[in-house]
Image: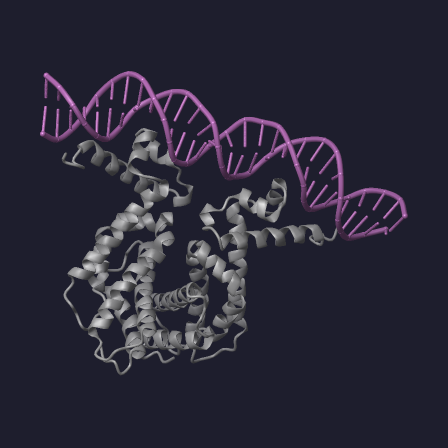
Length: 194
Length: 194
DNA sequence: TCACTACTGAACGAATTGTTCTATAATAAC
DNA sequence: GTTATTATAGAACAATTCGTTCAGTAGTGA
């Protein structure tokens, strides 16, 4: 057995390709970026690209997946707060730290393409959290819809925030999020007690 | 002066192209649809396509714009309800009538690409409605965010609905929407009285 | 040192795009 | 009905882009 995936060259290539891709996303829309653009910007050979990624889309997917994973990790690590549906403050803070990435994704339209995927993953986790905090059994449909709206609203605010250069503090954003979402959820799950 | 845009052939071509496009959207993602696919399905010449549309994207845009216009028209025609932010029931009903189109767009991913545009237009109208119903002057930022969330939540529900074959009645969807959104907005605009 | 693995760079066919052109057919106006 | 106008068909075209292949080179880990 050989030690796999420890070749510096591979990591370097993936890193350089990724950086070139993000840089390009700040200038062009994702759809307008060609593989050739990435090759030129990263200054690597065509065959090298295709040994690392199946596709241009694969390149985007890997980044999106990493973003989703980071968000999910924040979700899971956060203490089981009963008052809050998601650790939104921590998430907003995390996004601000990664603002360059989110900015590029927002500008380039990469996020929009996968917003559905992100929302699906997020809402799934929200649904679990909701179910855990509820006392009485609740119709699945109600739960699902509530979770969808929570995740959707969060992503909506995130996108709006990124488009406006994140000039508002994470705390403020969190405040808006809480005030806008929590009442609706409580109303929706009336008698179930949060 | 010649009467412009009354040639039956033009309208027929545009109609056939549009139908082919929608049909293809049910089978493939927008990005995977080529102009050639449209030509084959519509059974028209290549040059014909390019006399009507600048682009493949132009074809999508024209449909999206029509959808947005239809929604906007419903918004404006609706009586100035003070209780409701948007005539959501009417909108849900309208969407159900156009379900084939929305279905195709949802499946093909066309909506996601332009969700930002739709949300921008919708939220603009929502903001105007909000401002009209408020008594006290309110910070623009608060209004804007509230409008964004209203429009975003509506589109989120719309998308979820379309993905689930619209098996729920428009009335039910409207009920969920009201219960999920109104409390948050009222909370957000406290003391301003809706 | 040595075996391995990744990269370069070029070349390739295939597919797609958007343009241009001529001949043909449909249309609207008279 | 005749006629001038306009849309379409259909083919051909160069230009891109894509994804693959391969031989030579260089970096890497053991």
